[in-house]
Amino acid sequence: MEEKKVMLSGIKPSGDLTLGSYLGAIKHWKERADEFDCYYFMADLHAITVRQNPADLRRRTLEQLAQYIACGLDPEKNTLFIQSHVHEHAELGWVLNCYAMFGELSRMTQFKDKSAKNADNINGGLFTYPSLMAADILLYQPDYVPVGEDQKQHVELTRDIANRFNHIYGDVFKVPEPYIPKVGARIMSLANPEAKMSKSENDDPGRVTLMDKPEDIMRLFKRAITDCDACVRYDPENKKGISNLMTIYSCATGRTFAQIETEFAGQGYGSFKTAVGESVVELLRPIREEATRLIADKAYLQDVCRAGAQKAEYIAQKTLRKVYKKVGFVAK
Ligand code: AQP
Image 1 (tube, rainbow, N blue to C red):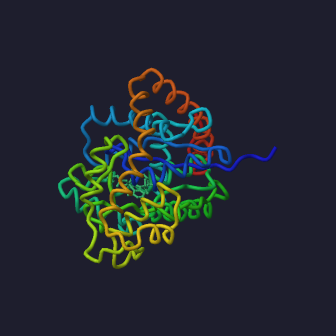
Image 2: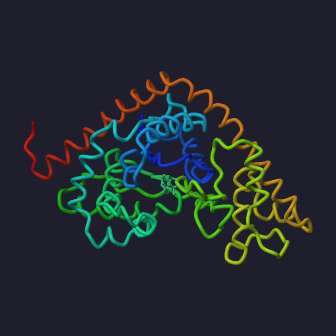
Image 3: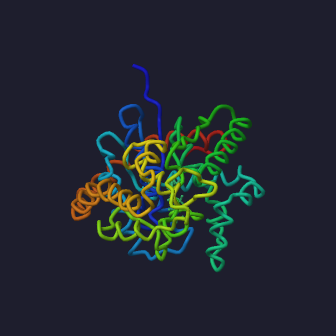
């Protein structure tokens, strides 16, 4: 029997998952479970590159697992685990640090953005984040890494590191491809369509989280920033707010931009914003309800992540053993 291709991705439990996390990442993960051997994790090692409250981090990590499952990731079909439970991530991360160049790491947009936002805590982990991300990926030899547009640069660096390593030691790593969705790869804040909708931006009045109540979602959409043109038309250059809302509506309803333009022709923005809000309420309702149920069942969540870590570790160990041998470490 032909082996299934491997797919892997992760999200930092650095804040409550947003509509952006869902449309840019998780939605595409669940569509692949039958076709691929899928590994998805809660990237807690990455989360501490920005200071976290320990109790919140612990709570959010398990809540994120509950939300993954509620979004449709069946733990029987997908390997779901917590990054820090598989110590091979940190170990390979160190090795790959020695194959990632200072200049490359300095050019990463996320490092520059996060350094600007956390000027009092520009730590080494923030700088070497891409080496750990390369380790996360390369340990599992995946064919595809589904990410939003903002993570494309990191996947490209992973490819460079893998190629560099393979060039020295032979074919150790499979060089993965980023998989970036055509629509929804970058969902912007409803309050500032120039900025990405981010989990950790708690005070962003344009952030929709998976656990938001319907009335809060409707309020956020009614207040969404648009323009004074009063015409629902997709133009991401000149009409960023409306184009963002159209992207969200398209993802939630499956309609194309042309169909949306026809649907709202001559109607102004009020009814459009209401329709987008309602589509998101209906999209998120079953996720919120199922996640709420699962969050209350801590024993089940613990079982899922324990089983996931065991399965992930088996693969991760094999790759790490090979890497240690190649670089010249003495076997235990
Ligand atoms: N707004 C978004 N639109 C589309 N995709 C998004 N992703 C995140 N936000 C959006 C995708 O989700 C995956 C997980 O991202 P991450 O948590 O590892 O890091 P991030 O991209 O830095 O996410 P945030 O929300 O901005 O977190 P914080 O605020 O902690 O830095 C990735 O595939 C990402 O592309």
